[in-house]
Image 1: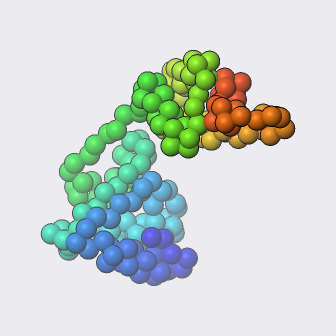
Image 2: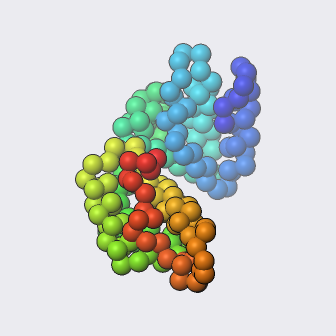
Image 3: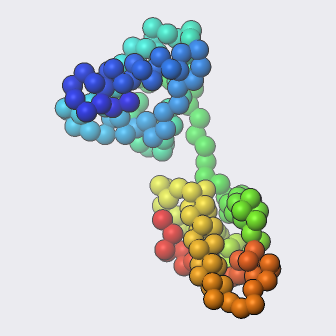
Amino acid sequence: MVGEYIGHTAMKTKEMLKKAMGGILFVDEAYTLAQGGEKDFGKEAIATLVKAMEDYRDNLVVILAGYSLEMQRFLTSNPGLRSRFPIQIDFGDYDSEELFQIALQIYNQRDYELSNRGRWKLREILNQFTKNHHPHSGNARYVRNLVEKSIRLQALRIVDKEPITRRDLITVEDWDLPDPASIR
């Protein structure tokens, strides 16, 4: 939505709004539009968005998403913004059991299985994560990154194994799970 020069942002934002007419415009990490300085083009995008939301209120739904605290600041960045979003929904982080189920689903979708010890270690990692994580650590994104790294580590472990079985190819062991501090 943000352009490279003065006037370009309004044009780009209007193009996005035109594509969304009769439907939904979803802006993820919307707060980044208000993070620049006084000469930042994000404010131009916000002003264009606010005007369009009023002009086309019967033909356009706008959904903004982002971290709670940053979104609260964002909604104060333009006088007309907060009143245009009377419905605000706060989605809490997944708990450790939900994260565990997400991880199992990702492994399953990629045709991998966790050994029993792997399951136990994964639960421990996720329990620690939910107790100690930073609010912007991504929650389910953390799980996806953990699973992907464990699959890479599993591949490195079995690359020279001979003979190799199907079970070797699909099983992620506890030692394949990475050090939690190495996950971003």
